[in-house]
Image 1: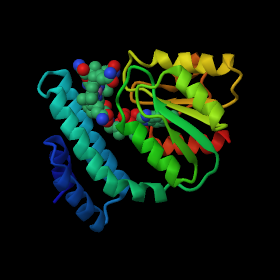
Image 2 (image 1 turned 90 degrees about the vertical axis):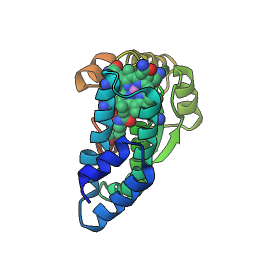
Image 3 (image 1 turned 180 degrees about the vertical axis):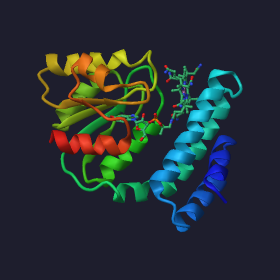
Length: 206
Ligand code: B1M
């Protein structure tokens, strides 16, 4: 049993084995954050690289993503404990045109676990839905995820729409292609590189 076996189980889409091995690895004393980073996220990085070269196809990547989620169910409750508490309401979603949900789901889990109220709008969320939900739930923060350079510009659309609608919720951004520089450029209130960072950022903003 090793981190690498979990990685391989995710890559071949065997969620039951990935979850069982993750449980065994936790029981053996490996920190949840290490399993998440070195096995689960690393497996998705490899799946992404293989998708880019045509070695893996979309259905195979989808099956790997489902296996990652199965293992995440085991690992993420322990990650949450490592982050600490907070209060406030966060509207969360993956921006329009983008259906990547795993990172956004991890952000939701960590915010939930840290005590924030999270309104998860799902994926492929148009700007208007972020604005309506922020108003309806009197949100403190609107957190957006994007995994593609082609959908990042939709974050600016949401930032501008919040401003124009006079909604005071603070927009924050994250996702693999995002940077602090891009967040600054589009006028977001903050950028977080990972789900733990999102919790710290929200806590700092409130
Ligand atoms: Co897609 N995909 N995908 N994909 N996919 C990427 C993102 C890609 C990098 C793969 C590649 O080519 N190497 C590439 C994007 C290139 C780019 O623009 N940079 C890509 C592409 C091109 C595509 C399609 C266009 C492929 C096609 O159809 N030809 C297509 C687009 C669909 C669409 O959205 N319209 C597509 C489809 C898919 C699947 C449906 C097959 C599947 C998604 C399944 C699902 O989510 N249910 C999928 C997957 C799984 C990936 C990869 C392999 C893995 C993504 C993932 O879940 N990572 C990905 C390659 C990669 O990331 N290395 C890839 C694990 C997750 C935990 O990490 O989401 O980065 P991540 O979240 C991190 C941080 O980014 C951060 O916290 C998390 C860690 O704690 N974070 C936030 C995320 N959101 C945050 C929000 C915050 C704060 C932090 O708020 C403040």
